[in-house]
Length: 363
Image 1 (cartoon, rainbow, N blue to C red):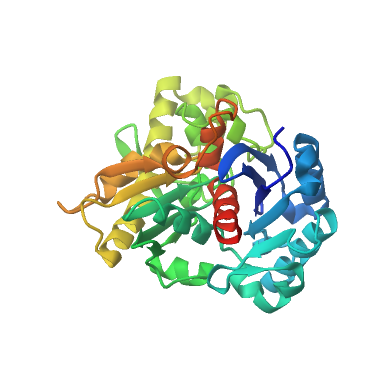
Image 2 (cartoon, one colour):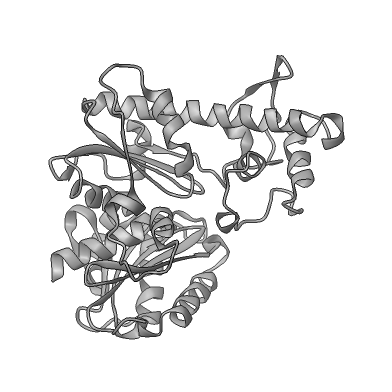
């Protein structure tokens, strides 16, 4: 464990996960993620913070930079209450003395706990902005494609700034810069209404029978470390159980087709999600007229989809063709960090970004 001097811990408090990064002297030393079903109560956040304290004994002597999206969960009556509730929970659990705890408020800068109420609208769901701003400091122009368990951010940047004028989730849903598509928690019925399988098109069942975790688990692309949530039926995550959930989506049982056929169905749903997100990426690229020299920066546990998304979005000769990863090319991972830290920085990019931006602006 490094010395507590000049340690900054970046936090990304989501509705389903808490992600955190330990940064020392501008270098990523460690990154971690904990499941946190915040909609079930703030006690889940308290447990995640306890796990972080056990992992990082220097936590109480560190500075803390926070971003969040968890204010959206239905535990809270509205987003303002969510921001204030999460901020209060963090202020009670983390050091909150002068200079110890700051909240990322986007265009409004950094806020102390006492300033959260005044700036809650800037604090709410601003984690994407931190990641994109960090990437913009490394590459002259590009687009961040951060695919998580639940959502995807598609953010153009250039000249060391984020190009979008959208800031809220509502605005980004209109502009196409926020796609409510992820590789773990998204219901499969949200991907398409008709699926091509066994040589014909079938309508799908609009029921919560399966999630995208089933799709990518069967395709062999979902890392078990990111497969933290119960399946739709609370059953096993074995391949037969996964096939059974996907079979229900087309009115069948696992025994009604071969393993290869169910894999083909999973790949059809994968293609549907790639096309859906790819269409939004096309829109973002066109809106900001990025050149072919722009860089597509991948992040999130679903980063494995980015090459296919780029191919789906490449409708013009000027479409970007250069790729970079947030964990490998933006996050400044310490050479002394444990193996795999860069991969976790990729998955937990906003927590790394808020820590890095805070150190850059306060040291």
